Image (cartoon, rainbow, N blue to C red; front, top):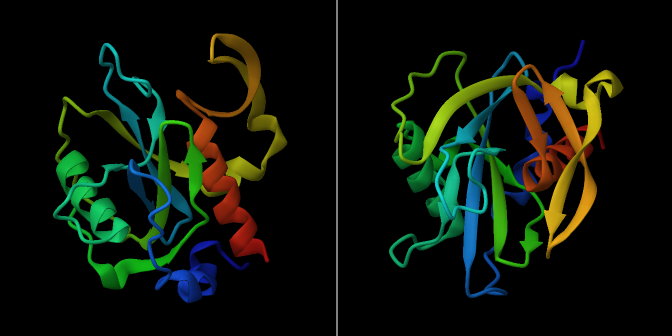
Length: 183
């Protein structure tokens, strides 16, 4: 059986994509995939005034002036948030950027070893989860949840895996990854 991990090489052609300065506020995330096809996600710490407080996401954050590239932003933020030092050689590729009203977000996919030790920055990260990528293709895990955008409630797609409810930007990045690995 072919695994998602074994198809990561299909992303290599997108590794060298240049950063496009289309937003004054940019961020990037690191999507770590293990050989057993589990993807690393974090539950953000609950913080008053944080738009993504308590949400599931990927290690990452806003670009800083010394980063140089959004890839370097993802690497720096991953080390700061979960204590994992990534190397550019582990990067398999970059997914399509997502443009949110608050910022432009890039996602970089990294090969991860089967075992990683985490040191959480507790002011940023509450928990780390390794979620099976196959669950995101299983309709039994799919549903909707109420969300609010510009004061208006709506039903957002969600994937519920145990205590992890993945939706919004994070779900869009996972769906983009699955699409790229399946094509």
